[in-house]
Image 1 (cartoon, one colour):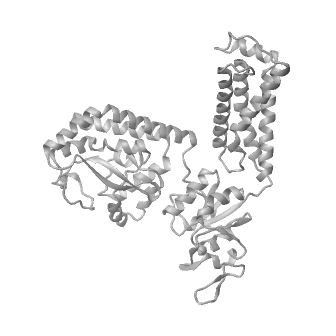
Image 2 (tube, rainbow, N blue to C red):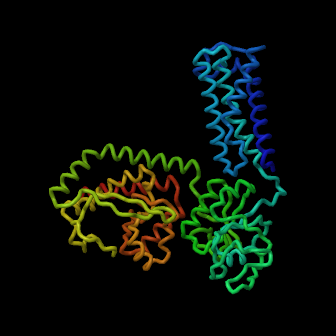
Image 3 (cartoon, rainbow, N blue to C red):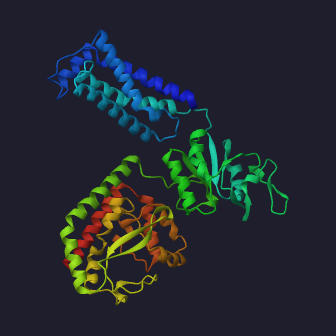
Length: 474
């Protein structure tokens, strides 16, 4: 497999040659005749076959434009196949617009419209295929594996289970060796210098090279052309783990873990190997695109359409009780991060308790607040959080950061909900699971994490809307 400057040279030369071939093919009399006869919108154009100086300039300008806009793809950076295809097609389209701009200003060497359109159409298929092909690995290539984590004791245990050669490992400067803290920089081929001046044996780790800290993960993936990362973190529900996992997913690198050291939510139940794939994959690029587009459209339309309703709610809240119209809380989002969430105030503004309680047991809820909670209209301001990208329409409900401590006491696996972005509604909400029963709520949330898809989201939204309609009609 090509790397470094070899990859840059071959990929760029391939783009230039493909562009030249595309222009020559579409400039043929037969191609022009077929295109200008049978393709709608272009069937009124005349056949234009370039020759001599005009053909030379058409080829030169096309090669410069397409090769120039594809510059980011010349970097030998790991990417998923679909990401490579989409990026290449987008860049080819940009090159087409650049060439069309020359034609718009009627420059003397502009490309005929039929020639330009056919060239971009051919290259939008040929160039993605080219970049996917030069990135493929030979069958006999065992791949390049990197171990990343913060627990050297775990790294020592899992290395014998890795069946392919390991390039090295990444870990923080201060890490844990079987529960003890030490400095990774002291690692040598013979072991680690212990606090008492002795040396701790690493077993399978002693032959590996430390390639840096966790902050170097992205650089290491690109520099060493890594295709597999084995994660070895003490806790698989912390931001460091998710950060490494997210970086692997972003670059199309397979992420694996040792079954003994990970959470059951992360791996497939049917996989019996010791080193297994992390089953918590990001959304398929198309599904992710649809979900984000749906979230954005839903929030934007909801905010615009509900302006009169929100004005009426504001007036009702001010007339019903003293205090602000909105209140905010810090909620937990994906990977343990926090963000402020806003809701219409439905309670008398006094000190808040982190203990989850049912609405029927809380006498601080106002008359307007009772109606807002029953119809879920107090959630309308959260449409802004969805628009900003902190939340999704569907996902586990974001919990108050201070409340999560108590919820985790009742449901130790509560942090598994951090595996996805929180939502306005979710599987737990449509099944009436509340924070007063964290185990039940967690069960529904984890089921959603396992089944998440764009169409599953649509089903949940439809059921939630139906529940609201029923509540209003009662």
